[in-house]
Image 1 (cartoon, rainbow over the protein chains, first blue to last red):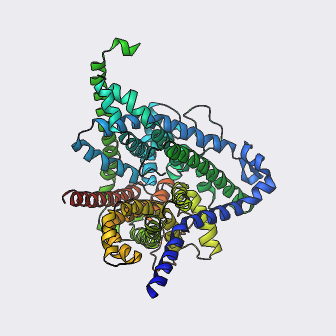
Image 2 (tube, rainbow over the protein chains, first blue to last red):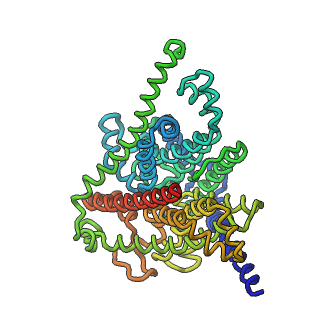
Image 3 (tube, rainbow over the protein chains, first blue to last red):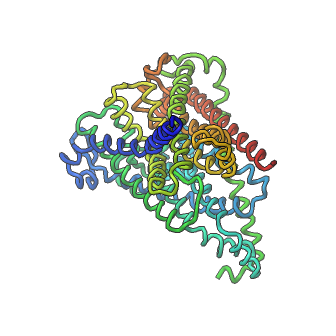
Length: 291
Length: 283
């Protein structure tokens, strides 16, 4: 009898730990949205999102330029990282001998584990002068930020795509090879199409990581709140806006920064729902896939 | 079209080359970044740099208080997140079955894993620092980092608990053990290497985070004594040194220390996983 009570108590206790992350998410939503309410009420939600001017000292809190900035950096970094990461994923899943795989796996894990501040620092010290002397501009801008972000999101795309490619049933490959196709023809016409849902998941997860990245972007993007005209122009990302001004913000300015966090939160939730759709609907299991 | 001009055999050879090049290029990227940081940073790292306090807000002196701060927040994060993450994983793998609640728990962990670190920072500021009144302290920082390490620990623990063979559990039940006795004495010990790997990965996430703690730990330069003191973990110190242009030499040194810590963590996990894999294969 005592045993039974204990078993039930343990189960209830474990249940609480299991729903703990849900409780935390609700708390995050509550506390971020609560602080953001005044900016949506006093300044107006539409005005806040589509306003072009960010000048807290003059009471202007439009974050549109930063939404554009975040999107520019995210898409350019994806464009740089994607082709290369797919090739690397195919290499690891299909071509690489065991010895090479045993080197590449920890290399990719280490790339994923390097602190974002170290990436930012590397970008600031090495990439900014490189872009300034060889390509033009001040060196601080979309291109530099995208280059450093591309390296940061590569591990996500490579490892999730690799899992997707590996989980394609062997029969598909054997059937294609038996028909006389070369290995490359099999890869490009059979294996990759079958792995597409997993590959899309990897892109969306990488996108989430790129949008959420803060300090590495601050250190190289220039942080001017403006609509960029070329990829060498400086921009300010949504995340950077919070990190740059939170230290001294008060009043409505403080609420506006929480409002920026609300926008980030909503974007990430949308990406997550899309990723989950591809992940579950298409029934291809990709392991270890999270942002 | 191109595919008609070049024979499949030639394409095969060509693409083999391209694929090999992409693999090798990945390794080169890592070597360039780590090599550059270590080459520039290691000359600045010596015993004095590690064991002395910063002078003139970091322009000179060492990083001892930052190392202590990093140890405090990382240990706090892991100590808080491990029981929660492993408990949740045990519940999901052993009790929940195939219910709706499993999907909810999984989605919760995924969401927690993908919230941007700066949003965690704002939450920490409004919840731990202000609402709970913990102030700008290492405790608040450790709590925020615990939330960030939690999904990593949980996700890795679920996989390793689920991969414990069912026959282990059946043998234990057959001996008259209850569900919890089976979990505690059989399943968790068998899943231990995986659980430890998850904890180390969570630790890696906590030790390298700066954005989430920048408005939570107080960014003080003095040596923290208790967890209620403000502090400044290493990544945050590197950020301040680099962006405020205080001292390039000390920034390189701090970056090198961080890179070495991360390398130690990745090498340890890989050795653990490899040893475990060999043990399981060699039966």
